Amino acid sequence: MSKVAKTSENMKKCICMKCPSYTFYCKMKSMPGNMILMMGDKDKIHAEGMFCAYEKSHCIKEEKGCICSTCELFKENELGKGYFCTATDGK
Ligand code: SF4
Ligand code: SF4
Image (cartoon, rainbow, N blue to C red):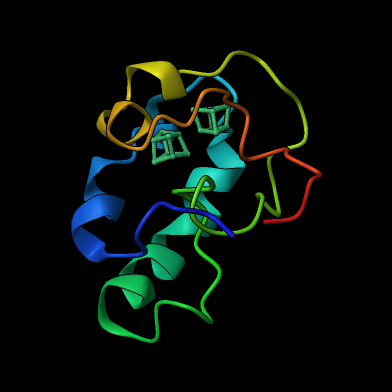
């Protein structure tokens, strides 16, 4: 279970979209998801972001660099590793 709180405040802190691994296709796909997340049931909706709190990405397949270590939530929650978008350990 992830220790990162699934809040819209935290979602705004996620910098995944600026990451080289976050593809253009993923950006397009994430827009409605993120908007729904802000309004809806935060536990059931898959958002293409804040992968450290939610499940891994449905569209990021290649690891081209991870900038999680520069994210506020990474420091606040002492996450220790990155690449949550491709993680296979099932959170
Ligand atoms: S630690 Fe990484 S996955 Fe988690 S919110 Fe920050 S940038 Fe996104
Ligand atoms: S989890 Fe890391 S590698 Fe994946 S998109 Fe976010 S910053 Fe990039």
